[in-house]
Image 1 (tube, rainbow, N blue to C red):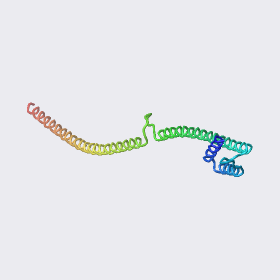
Image 2: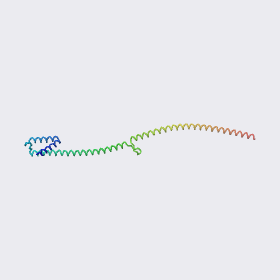
Image 3: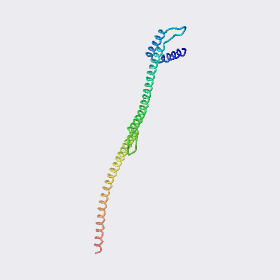
Length: 192
């Protein structure tokens, strides 16, 4: 009888830790069962049919709780598997996103990959270098043009001076030829 009371107390404690509504229902039935029992000396006498009924209800409740626990464990496992799958998918999506961002941030110039910032810096360096070269070429053209213009003027002046010298030399030569001819004529006249 003591073992039965101890077992019932243990079952009562187990149910006390489970669901409150089922616990209250079992506790109410247990209290009703104790109130409807007879007392023999200091012991309560509980009919076996009441104990069997109570035990079947306890077993049903335990089975129901066990099924609920198994269902919750299954749902927990499913949720863990789903969370793991979601983490794997997230990792895959993150790696694809990183790859896409890297590809989106890369510009190929003459077959060489550059980041967008590097590409913009390179383009601006090329533009500035071309602008500097254009300015240098412009000033070289201006200088060359002025040198060419000055050289042409000097050449034309030298050409004019040469033509003048040529004309004077011709006149001098003609004059000398005339004088020579005059001298030759005079010498021939004197000889004759």
